[in-house]
Image (cartoon, rainbow, N blue to C red; front, side, top):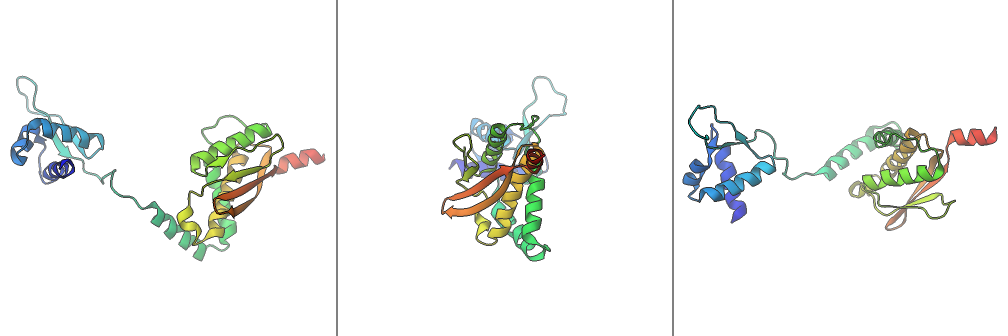
Length: 220
């Protein structure tokens, strides 16, 4: 099978102290050199092997030699849900005020998500559009509010769904802070006043209001 043959090539490279040629690998594994070349190209694209320049001076073009990359497999399995659960468990158990501190963490995080946006969200419409973009990029699947006076953003997905059941107040506070931090960084005339989690099984709702600076200006 193709996958099994590719594994054998990678094992041969990992077990070799020196870079190997295509012809040498073909002889060892008993397959055609073109087959070896095909699999080496695929392994090189994923970063598992690398081509090595031949230092031996010789007439003509020296044969390509390959070795296994000396690093962790970038295509290997990941378990970010376990990492998120471990960190959330620790935060919930040891923070002085988990909800307050999680909100503050979210604000700090949210401010970094808008750094590539060089403009200021000077209008309500632009602020809502920018926040919807940030939420979409983060995985919330937001719905664009409709109407000129719409002040709710409907969120159709929770990107931290795996840990919500364990510590929903902490996770939702993080999301609230994220939105607040993003709008603050954009100097938007809006703020997120609250977040209603799971008003329906597939829906959370973020409520928008005037930013504190805007409220002060209106009262002046």
